[in-house]
Amino acid sequence: MPGDFDKGAYPEPPRQTPAPDKQTALPNPAIILSKLFYYAVDLPVTTARGVVDGLRSKNRPVYYHQKFRRVPDLTDCEEGDYLCYYEAEMQWRRDYKVNQEVLKIVQERMRACHQREGYSYEQNCAKEINEFNETAKNYQLCYGDLGAYASARKCLMKQKERMMEAQAETA
Amino acid sequence: MVGMSVLRSAAALAARLSPLKPGNNVANLLSRSVARTDKVAVRWGHGKKMFIIKPTDYYDRRFLRLLQFYILLTGIPVAVIVTCVNVFVGDAELAEIPEGYVPDHWEYHKHPITRWIARAVFDPPEKEYEKMMALIQIEKEKEDLRLMQSEVRRQMRQKGDGPWYYVGTPDKGLIDYSHKSSPDN
Image (cartoon, rainbow over all chains, first blue to last red; front, side, top):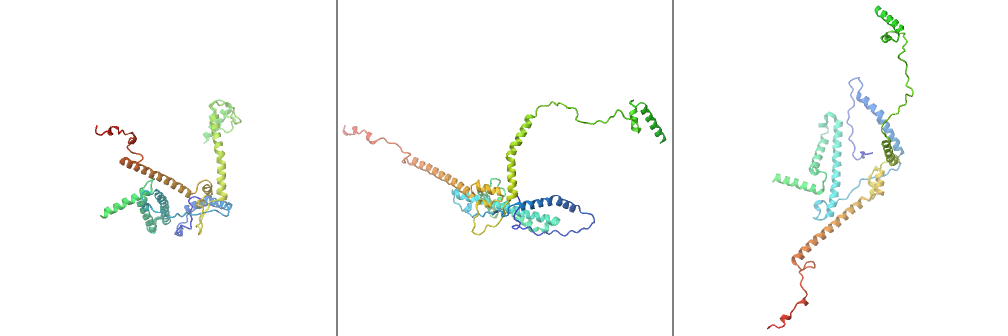
């Protein structure tokens, strides 16, 4: 199923929804609608999924996450060594993708926290919000405006510019 | 109230006496027992057959029919195969790489059809990597050779003594020393 990751690797935090505190005798329309949705959509879909899972082969194939060896970086390559450039470029691209996914996961955590806490999210999930802000700031500094044709060289040049600016500020 | 019933009975009498007169139809609404002869129950049976003249839609319908046929010719088998694969074989599950085991390159994909394509159709990504590196190596060697060639040419031109560039001198045997044989002439 697309969009389904291993729940054990990134466990969702324990639910902190408070127990419902009914103060009126009127039926809650949200509960009515949710039960309607459950019986009309959720239950048939879940049973269908159960049927299909039963039909699927018992010894399922397995897939792994590929681990790549680290190769010398662009800064460790000699000038004119295009093979070294290529390997460094590929490694940089893999790292770029990994960082994008990391940012997405951190953002997902912050959004889940926001959804859980409701109105008091600013103080209750300060940790997740800080984590996301920092990750996003670092990502923006590192890969921010590189554009669609980003490459390791452009990232390196951007880093050089940053270092030059930092030096110009301190000097 | 009484006037109304008098009016009503008068209208009924008038309608009964001359039912086909135009003014008496209004009375039908008020009276209760007048035969309505102008409104007969009409039942639409098969209707009158009409020959509707319109431009031909044979070609349009033929096109749509053929389009449907050729799309479904491969569409239905593909849909059936994909459904069967998804229902009976199913996605792979994520697992940790066991110690000392090097998975094959298709074992890094989740969907069974992707795995099959990676196994049977495409080259392994390592091979693609090496192919790209081989191309880069060839281009690098070409570039080196071209640089060397232009450098060599420059040097030879400058010094004028390499096998490519030299100033040609005539053959030694063609020199005429005959006017030098008598120096005191």
